Length: 100
Image 1: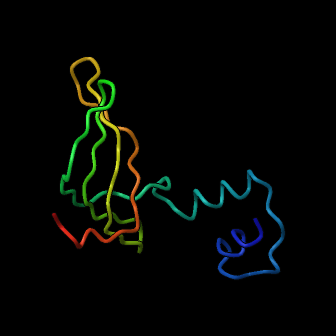
Image 2: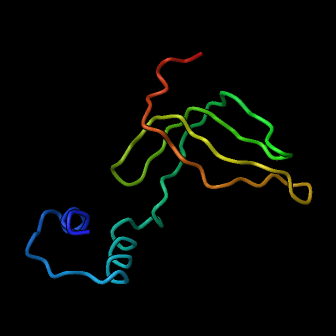
């Protein structure tokens, strides 16, 4: 936790300890966008059926403040009441440079 606090406080090792609630509040204020990157581009690679749901894999570009990443994205999808529903997506650190 001390290393994470140090990173949050930009290297100020003499900063007072934080409670969990203080840390969460500080992180939310620091991130500003709720903590989730915004997917800017998406290129579908494959969709796999999984017990009536779908696993979607693609290559995406995402940003959050000054952070920019290109990598493989995975998320779940399903149809509920006739409408598509999507799970929160996750991104790998792979560059997607070896297109297939």
